[in-house]
Length: 229
Image 1 (spheres, rainbow, N blue to C red):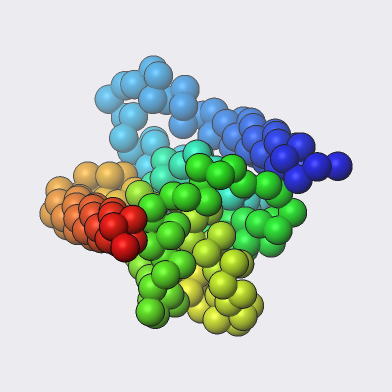
Image 2: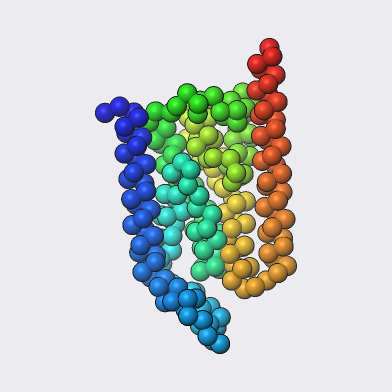
């Protein structure tokens, strides 16, 4: 089996697992969805009561879905990370997000050598920037922190640079902390209608966005300088 075919099969399996998990989450959250579709004077109270009653099974479904969507290139798990904060509160929601994102990245890193990547992917400016850093560990940790940078680029860099497993795990654990925290606390703030917390979360998102813009600009500058040389 060619690496390209294997890549397509793995992505298809990942999408199928994601659909499977979404179905079970939809089934378990159907009362809340119906309540939102048919609101009444007690909607908020009933919704708060229902949404915080979900058991560990749903938390595992949600963790698995966050991991799978993190692992599939081009997919985003941000909506479900926010949902984790809404359903389980800021701290448990954060743990679900954190472990889900760590697991998703570890899955990607484990599959890097088993699939084929296009020439365009290998010439990506951010990828080349990460691979040519004097301190690549710091750059990769920052890459994991920024949700606007595809995690597959960071994982590909780690595999190609032969980063030891224990060091890689430290980078993922640290790198996935900020966004997992922001989404969980943001979801809880939305659920509680806490404007101050929401403003703080939005400021943190803007900061991450600015950091990602600066990193992309640095990658482009590095790429241009390399071409000139």
